[in-house]
Image (cartoon, rainbow, N blue to C red):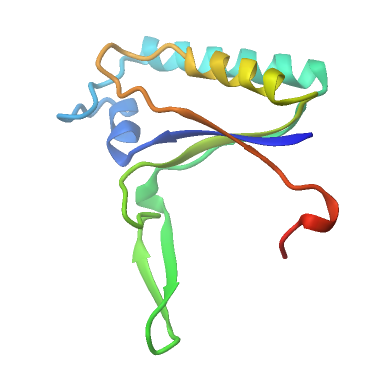
Length: 138
């Protein structure tokens, strides 16, 4: 079964990783940032070795994204950022091929244990099964 494993964040989190603290996120040191990258690299390496990794990517900060919707007149409305009703957004993901929900949950638990500076918001790791075959949309 294929699964999408997602991690969340905010623009403030990306800025904190660049050394800019805010009321919601303390500034990361270079050592803390490197520890996070090393931890995630180890997860990616393990998933590649086990054959479970299909794809996995960190995403750029929301300040570099756009939201495209249709207005009442049917014309495109383009705004900065991926925001709809929330400031939290998809910060990165893995597409994994796992034996079942129990295994992918073990992986998500490991992702959730990523080292971060004290005071960083604890976002959930979201698991979504990916439909196979005839049930696919589009």
